[in-house]
Image 1 (tube, rainbow, N blue to C red):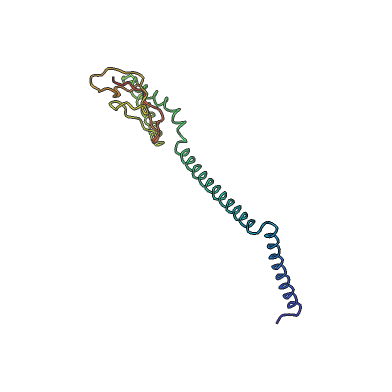
Image 2: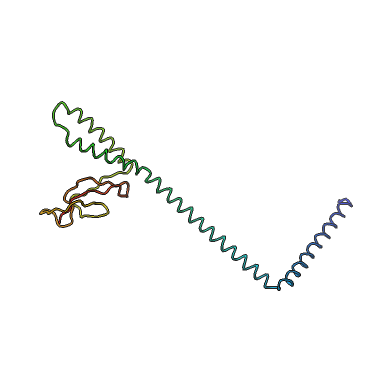
Length: 186
């Protein structure tokens, strides 16, 4: 059973709620009269629709930004080692030159074998990062992969075929890291 004070408070609250509702209806009617009736409502609806459209555009722009940033992040991670690998390519070239010019006598055989082991180890590390040497000799000249430094006459190759590789070209994963310097038949 409710106390008399509680019943009185409920009645007061109901009366206040009814008064507030009536005042809101009167304010709306006053607002419509003062602002031209249905025109104000239409204008408010248009503003609401514009705000909704702007919100959707901002949300789409943000989604595109997020996707683009994610793609750039993945690309950066994939090619993060490219600068270091590029700087190591001359070292790799010098190892190859040293092995080609190594003397063939018995005294230097152990030294040459050690240099060869170091070269293979470096080559293995770079290969694990995605470095691969290009195969160029006998291939058609492709300016995306080859840098022609000379044209030579050749009886064994057709025109536009790489006849000799002067400096090796390398790919890092699927991207050209260094084009091969080549001689091309004419």
